Image (cartoon, rainbow, N blue to C red; front, side):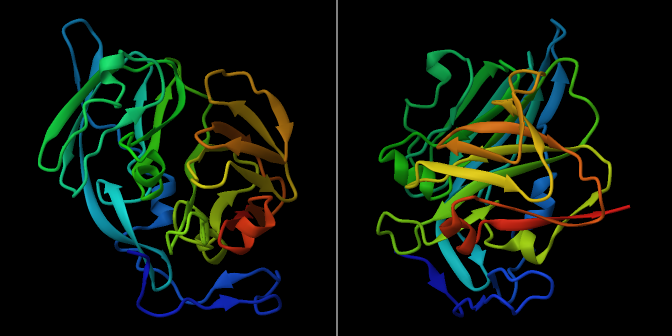
Length: 306
C-alpha cells in the first residue's frame, strides 16, 4: 500500500520564506520517533570487548521490522526498517575489529544484511534468506577502512532497499582521521504511490528538514561528512554546496583527497567522505544539483556562526 497522509503536506512557495526563495514544507515531523539532527552525529559502536588475541570484538543486534516512518509533515511511508529507523543505525568500528551482527527478522518478509567491503562469501548477506521469526549472525573482520553501505539483499532487491533497509558502516583507519565535527548524510528517495518513480527526496529521510532546521556549525571548524547515495529508481544523485568548496575522499578508503570541488555526483551505492570549512558566518545552502530532487525535498543549510 502507498504512503498515508494524516494531513496533506503543504509547500511554501518562492517568496514565502525570509532571506531565501526556496520551496519547503509547512509544519514539522514528530522528532520523537526520528530526529534527523540527532541522526547526523549518532554513531553506534556496538558492545565492545577485547579478545585474547588483542583484537576488539564489536557486537550488535539488528532487528528488521515493518514500521511507518514520517518523511514529511503528516506524510507516512510504510517502511521496512533496521532497528526502527530509515536509514538504519550508523555502525562504526576500526579497521581490524572483529564484527558480529545478529539479524533478527521481526518483519513479514525474508530479509538479509549485505555489507559492502571485504569479507568471506558466507558472510556476504545474499544467502541464506532470514525468514520471519528467524535470526542469523554475520561475523567478519572489518576491512578496508572507509565508508561502506549495508542493505538487505533479498529479492526483489530494489523493493527491499527502497522500503528502507539500508544504512552506513564506517570503518575508521587504525590511526584515525584528523579531528573534525563529523556527520552522516544518507541520500534517499521515496516512491509514495509505488509507480516506480520517487515523489519525495531527502537526505536522512525527512524532506526539507535541514532547510527548516539548519545544521549549526562553527566558522573555521573542519566538518567531515560521510555521504552515501542509497536512492532507488534514479541512477545518479548529487551533493552541491553554495559559497564554498570541499575535499572529496572517494569511498573513504584513502587519507589523501581526490579533488577540491563544490559538486559531487554519486551513482547508486556510491559513497564519499567530504571535508569542508566554512569561512564566514551565515547560511550556506546544500542540495542535490538535480533541480527536481531539490524541489521535492533534498535541500538544506549549514548555519555558520563564530
